[in-house]
View 1 (cartoon, rainbow, N blue to C red):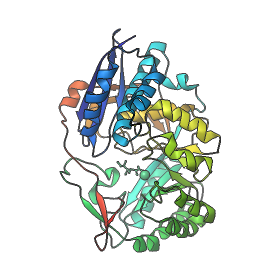
View 2: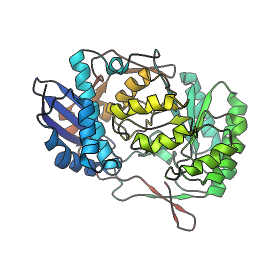
View 3: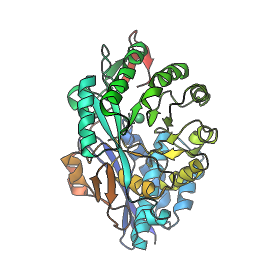
View 4: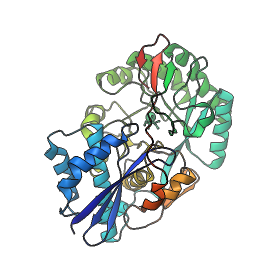
Length: 405
Ligand code: GCO
Ligand code: MG
């Protein structure tokens, strides 16, 4: 079964998505997600110029060899742009293999380890009261795990909350240049423990809670935050510190018992290796699209299992439904699955383009047993929503210093 053609599509049903379609000589096709938020066309160029010409005529069944060929064979192994391109090819090939076998992809990974995928919902608000109202709704809807984010009084554009776009806080569309947000660590640390205190006072400890710091703190500031949040027993604190210097995480780990999650920007297993083997994190958040596909994510899960680290894949709205479905298969299989981030099934425009067999019930997602990934892409509908240049925001401290967004 040879690769006959590979097409790349960019569409913007509210935000940009890059989708890959691999077509084989016997008429089958598979779909992959290559979306890299704010850098979409770099991935398109990488695919069209440097990947696709090398793959035409290759055996579509050789997923592992094709992965190694695109990774090791390029000499330049990692990097967000190249990894997103490799991931899309890899996932599309798994989709094809599932269709040939007439089995859902989770069966090819080793079968189901659980009935469904437990997800965590996002609850965001401008005030603590607003967040608590949202949490009440989420609990009523059956969610068992919820991420809480709240606007920090006196700062502009807090991560996770953006005024009228609360549930799609990173919704793109019209950002021809990166918007700028403000940040004050002092104001944040003075405010955020109150959010979790009030949530526990009102709803008790049966609901699991988590929080994303979005890499704004230093290690010792995270120790302070961790100690303040310890009484509220979070499921995890995500991305407290930028991940480049993993030694910083040792400082945190040695001084607070707050569980730590990291990895949505990891491109390879090597990024996660020191944090996992030294048992410094509890959840690894690498996404299929940004971590190179299902082939390396399976290896990552197996490696993490040895160290009691659980999988909690990134599930932000900039990962397309193709990545979402790839996560569903990975999460159903992984014996060390923890929880899946979930922001809802998307806008009507998005669902005109992507179709996928998934249902939410009591905070768990069930998928149909369709062969492959169970996702499809409507090329004609995608044409109605052409690419729009758009950026993620950047953040500055109150004195103007550029900070991590
Ligand atoms: C999350 C993430 C996202 C990212 C976004 C960047 O935990 O969901 O931090 O909100 O900011 O995916 O493109
Ligand atoms: Mg995050």
